[in-house]
Image 1 (cartoon, rainbow over the protein chains, first blue to last red):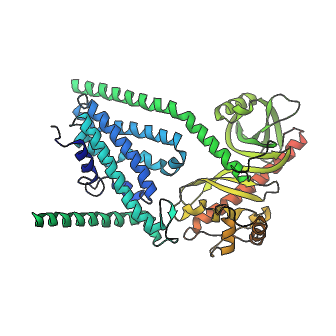
Image 2 (tube, rainbow over the protein chains, first blue to last red):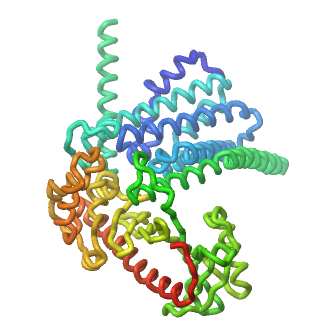
Image 3 (cartoon, helix red, strand yellow):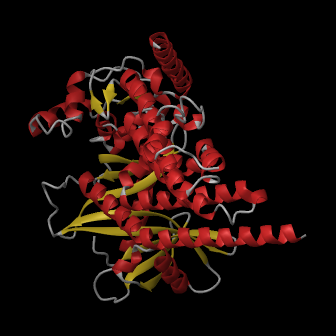
Length: 206
Length: 303
């Protein structure tokens, strides 16, 4: 089974139609826990993009030699390897970002989105298609995290990217973990609403 | 049966491959990581002493680390300090053994180069071989004595204490009379926006200028931070717009006051306050004993 989508379609598919956070509703733990600021979302997005692309590539290359009975352990092993690699690279070359993100980077091993993409896509498709799918999914995850981070940082801390915009903190509880739940929920509803409106407008035109 | 064998074989091969990839990355990055950590710590320490990029430290300023060890010989335990020595002895370091009541037990010269002393493995090996058999030693912590032209200028005390969630790691700078001259939070995992605010200048700089006596009865008050005090505390962040004279004046007014708690993070504020008190208190006690022993035994140190 090979996909008939072009590379560009695969990338936009990950960002819009199958956005990991808002459409597939996978990897909710980081979406709720870490998306307190735009910068956090961006940093974790970079890390996930790296891990997703390299894991997809590895699995797509070796898909014929992976025994079907142990495919999930193999996926986990692959992801864990790449997570360890980026963990060490970040710790060595970007110590300031690592100080903030370190504990969450290690958690990427357990992100549902990566395992799911390996199982659903990379283990069936060609190497290049898996590469672009990995990029799309990583970018989609990053975009989702940054969108949530935007809302939570603006409302919770009154700042964006660390710059104080409002000069006061409108609703401090938005940076606490519990606010992540309804923030993600409300945004998911909002995006779904826009999509339904967009589709019904399109149908009315046709 | 054949299936199981293939599975075992393939899993082993994948694990080996993964191990090779991770090992290679470790080899490539570890040096840079250690170097970064060291540079960062050095920068923070000089910053606490008042030297930054714009104002570099004079050449006469020296940092002498003193390492504290716990020595176990049989059931009895005692404290050992690895201090740098100067003058006649060639060894470079001396290991001074003091029992828990502050009585001098003995000293051994330790042959160690200054560059190797900062590496935990090399240092532990040198200390163990100097102590001889039958005694076990365990590294506890270090203190950095800062001297300028041989005169003691300050102490830098790395330490950690429990915060609201996990341990908070700090470096504290105190002058020879144990008045706090600076506090830097190195690591913490307090709630962002609440307890995480302990890293902000308007909180951590409140400890500046607290004397040893004031620290003993220092507490935390839940009152708003006065505006003039906040401006002085955040002076560095705002580019030093307030003159040194006014800073000294305002800080003097608040020197005996308690610490103003962070809004919504009284527990974190209290934890830091108690942690700082504990570090200074214990250190003052220990350095008193160490100084007395060094003087009695006529061990010549460069500070």
